[in-house]
Image 1 (spheres, each protein chain N blue to C red):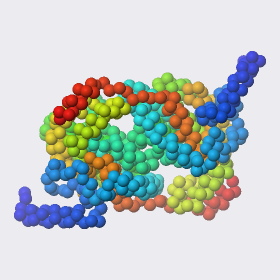
Image 2 (tube, chains in turn brown, red):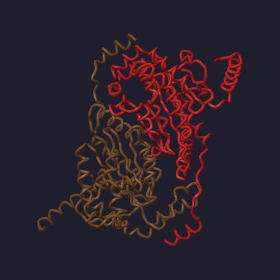
Image 3 (cartoon, rainbow over the protein chains, first blue to last red):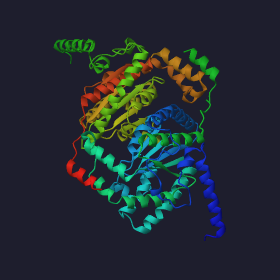
Image 4 (tube, rainbow over the protein chains, first blue to last red):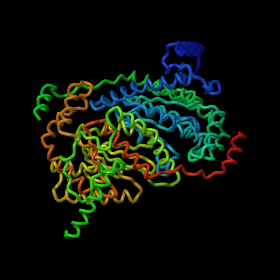
Length: 303
Length: 303
């Protein structure tokens, strides 16, 4: 039950968060994070904006390339640390409409990492076996192991997105899933998984451009699905489903980030930067050896 | 039973293969391939050689970087083709002594591909569950799907390598495994899997250098295992086990390649080039769309 005091403290919190976001040196995670306990109106977000980003495409490409060695080094430290029992790992969840750039993010951002430490899973429509299990079953099987970076191209959120838009489950069942997801993600956090959830925010117009590009290039026809045109007719229903999912499932343990995705260079820079900030916060360290260096050197030189 | 005629025809085949290898424009796969039906003497192979390679390190790094776009394009075509039912895929098997560069190959060569189409598996000592199954069981579960590039960092060959050196199975059982492996790889080839098996040929001296480097750098201590020094005492037994495995399991369906691995730049160039040659031989093509382009464009522009 909301009281005046609650309203006031919520207002205070809102203002505090806004100030945090607007500081010129604010981490990108503060700038792009979906605030908790507020209504989310995606129409108020400009999909072609470049919040806190480099000045333009050339600068953006250069800035992203410059992040590569830092990302690779942090990943190596995370993996190295896991060999000494550190259970921490990172999970990047990518959601967005068709052509919003989930695949492009894997190629250009995850391509900056050492592939041996990445566990990538693209979720399609569930198989009959998957449908016979609770919706989180297939998700649990695809989680990153300690030291790894996991990437979900689509995820358990499909079960409150397309499932809602296409009424693939009873409304009461859908309603329960948000809490199930929050409990699930809380348990991941408790087990050392840093969950970074990115909504690739694409405009209706830019999706049309990208679909036309695919049509115009025979080498991209394999990516084109005539059903993608159909889906555009329910665009507002998808936007609403995203708004509800992001609102209800942005938590301290697993926040949602809205990344404007009309400009590919910004998308790549922003996601690289979000990953960098989260990995730097983990600050994994190379574990010390459990052997006597001098003795090993002597023995080795004797061989 | 060998007759004089067999000997002569085998001699003829040998000479023909040698001529093939020595042609200045010979594909690298002909240069590095382990010939069938001959004794293999690894001591006759120089681990620091650069057969058919670029003139030096700088040229080698540049040549490898220049292959990247061609590799990525072929990979995309392979994947695209699989969406139209093409079952073909590639499996790179990496074997070699500790520090020979299996992990480095994944980082630097596989890092040139789109990570979403790569299925990487590092095989460690078998788990209790894996030991309860035939040795090919865990291998079968890790195979690339159609359109993918699979990478095995170690493989089923451990079951005739360390298993032989450390007598982890009865000799009679070991003896049967070579044929089992050949039948298994033949069945893979029949199912559309191009198997590329690479032995990273490292010298005893270069292994010492690399282990010393790990000892001298605290950031590499996590990679160091004091047991690796122990293993050096059975180096000749490993060499023999490799010679037998490569001799008996180099087949037309799944040939072995010996890649000199003392120079990392050559190793990366050579494996990139082997992959390129195999992917070019597959020559996968973008599948045509199964939709009416003009009609789709009209419908799309109406949205």
